[in-house]
Image 1 (cartoon, rainbow, N blue to C red):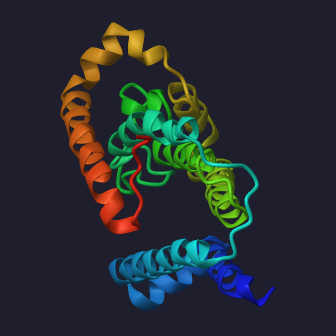
Image 2: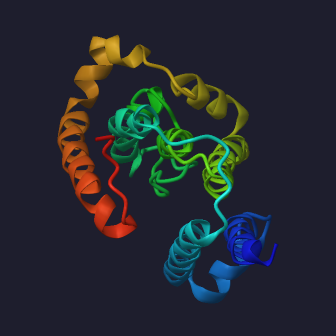
Amino acid sequence: MTDWLEFAAALAAFFASHMLPARPGVRERLTAIFGRRLYFTLYGTVSLVVLSWLILAAGRAPFVELWPQTPATRWVPNLVAPVVWTLVVQGIGLPWPWTLGGKRSARFDPDRPGFAAITRHPVLIALMLWSCAHLFPNGDLAHVILFGSFFGLSLAAIPTFDARARRAMPAPEASDAFRATSLFSLRPLVDPHWLKQNEDRLLPRLLAMVAIWAAALALHPIVLGVSPLPL
């Protein structure tokens, strides 16, 4: 049992680093003490260190196989990756401030919802897809807990952010904003008006997605020591 202690400690630190700052008043008090820029710099650094520790601890935990890895299961993350990276690159700077990666200073315009018409939580949905896809080839207990935790945390964040958005806007404005956006819908992709309105943002970011996807494939074996390719 002691072999699991490091993984348990890293998992507890991961949840604490995400849940404690989200408690009412905690973030406000910390930003008042450190200033907004320093707080988010410290928070990002701590989150990255804890995440790295958690991933390493999962690899060092005792191997308890729940299902085997096969070439077929290794295909799943590769097939999902283009969707994941598309959601990430479209979600960074999204003009919907109440989500992970959203532009905090943005004032949302229901007449120009941008990618929020497809989903107002693209980065969170990307994390859910990424973590779920990685469960298929990683069927040992530690990694099931690891990726299952990522999935659960991302899923739980969606209603939390939506509740924050509803509190931040007057009721009529919130109703219009939520009607203009979606949890997930592909309907805008067949709407000529939406496509024309967003082509300047969509096309360059799709090119960026291809570059990031290629870089991720190249760096995966270097950083994590495991090739993501099913061959």
